[in-house]
Length: 236
Ligand SMILES: *Cc1c(COP(=O)(O)O)cnc(C)c1O
Image (cartoon, rainbow, N blue to C red; front, side, top):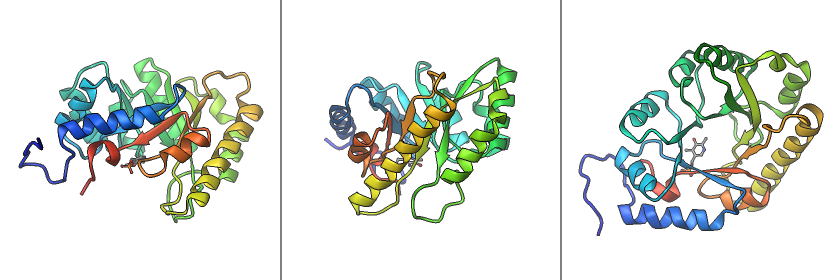
C-alpha cells in the first residue's frame, strides 16, 4: 500500500518500492561493485527504509542536508559526498565522510588534506573527470588531470588518498556514446594506475553509473555505482 506522506514536495517511491528497487539494483551488480544509494532530496524515512534492507553506503550532494541526515540516522552508515564541494564547507564533513567523489582541483584536494589532518584522518577522494559532452564547470579534463598528477604536489598531502576516478556520462539515450565515455574513463584509470599509483593499493575505485546507465558502467569497469532516483523515486 502506498503510504501518504503529505509534507513531501516530491513523489517518493512507496516503502515497498524502495525495497524492491534496491534489491533489483543489487541483483544486477557483481560482487566487486558497490552501490552508493544516492539519497539527496529524499527524507530520512526513505533512507531508513533502505538502511533496514541492509544498505549502508549513502551518497549526498549538499553539505547541510548530509549533516542533518547523519544526525538523524544510525551511526554505522558510510556517507559519501558525491556533489560539487565548496572549499569552505570541507570542514563540516571532514570528521566523518567516507569518500569524496568529485574532487576537481588541486586546491580542493589541499583543503581536504588540511581539514583531514586537523581531524587526524586520511580522507579517500576521487578525482572527477569531465568527459561528457555537456558544458560543465566541474571536473578535470583528461589533460588537466594528468598534468596535476604528473606535477606531483598531491604526493605531499598526507591527509588524503586519491582512491580512483569519478565521472558522469553525457545525458543522452545514445548508449554507444555513454559506453565510449565510461570506456575512456576506465582507460584513463588504468593509465594513471600504471603511471602514478602502481604501488598504491588504495587507487582502485571507478565511480560511474547512475540510474539510467549503471548497467553500462558496470560493463565498463565501475567499482562504485551511484544510483538515486531508480531506488528512491524522482526528485522534483
Ligand atoms: C544525483 C546524482 C546521482 C544519482 O542520479 P540518479 O539519476 O538519480 O540515479 C549520481 N551522481 C551524482 C553526482 C549525482 O549528483
